[in-house]
Image (cartoon, rainbow, N blue to C red; front, side, top):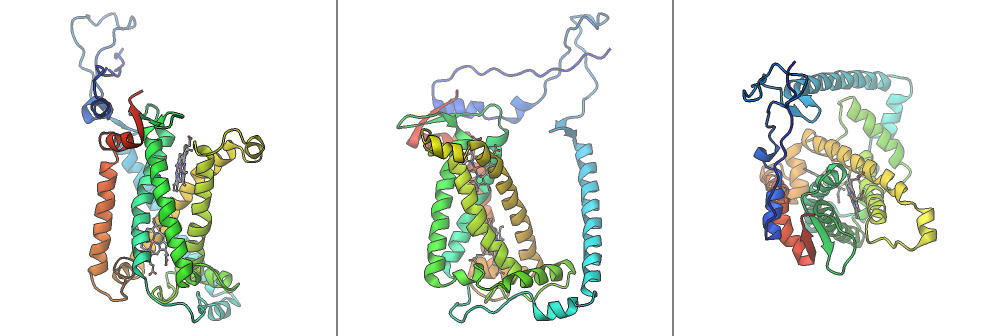
Length: 359
Ligand code: HEM
Ligand code: HEM
């Protein structure tokens, strides 16, 4: 019988500085590698104790599967997605030939006219808040996911004023949330002060049939005319409204409910709004954000990438590479943030606001 491999967990000697011990606690390639030894079991008496056994190379597991199994699964899923998309496109094209549908599409072309007061274009504050939103949102999703999945946090943080000790990832999540809320508030205040709110808040019931029309046009791959500089199509408008005015506040009120900011002794309030409800909504809200971002970025690139990127990253309606390079810089900064969000770098920052410990 083949002896079973077992994990050797490396023990760390206690170190003097918090930052050093946090650095040590960081999972490194060597610490996480599997060390395979022969486990002495009574079921394998034929193996002499002094002679180490070299078992056949075990396939390395990434999560629950080997690399080969992951590749197979991804190829299968991708093929399934392409087939499903093809069926949807054909079905949508079929729908457009049904009686009444061409008339519906002519009556509702996908967008309705905005009130004259709305200025076209993308002011600097819309570009900056959108960029900061990307940067913060990526790190918020990542740290939220870490909070959900971590079993042994690499470090902990306790507020200066005293209070509950939380994992450093949750500290990062909540600190980024505060910045994200401030950024969002600045965006919304300027949105209303500038009159630009009409672009992302529906002002007519016509938004709904137009959104349906735009959806049908996207699905037939005969895409609605792009006029993002002046006006979004109604589907874009409804989605942006949903993100800014429904999903973001929902993430905030459910997040705050689970956090230390929420009053614990408010008995009646806590009975009406139990923490389990907040937890049950918070995670699906993240899934909504992730789905929105995937579709949003796909459409930005599929419907005139250079022009769209110039809108939101360059502030012009031109078709050139300026917006693209600004977008690339935004992604590079976000990637640097992702790299920097590790205990070794976070611990000294977290220490400014409280105590950091490894247990
Ligand atoms: C790589 C990431 C992203 C890219 C390249 C991108 C790109 C863009 C572009 C080009 C527009 C203008 C669309 C047009 O002119 O038709 C836009 C608008 C918008 N995006 Fe993004 N986006 C990204 C991430 C996000 C994220 C993470 C969110 C929020 C969760 C978001 C929310 C919005 C909203 C609300 C608008 C409308 C804003 C307004 O007009 O004031 N975007 N985005
Ligand atoms: C003001 C905004 C937010 C606050 C105050 C907040 C707060 C929190 C808190 C306190 C937790 C820990 C819950 C626990 O102890 O189990 C948490 C978890 C989490 N957060 Fe947030 N959050 C906010 C926004 C967001 C956003 C915008 C996203 C993603 C788009 C997000 C994604 C997550 C995820 C995925 C988890 C793990 C949930 C789980 O374990 O089921 N959060 N958040």
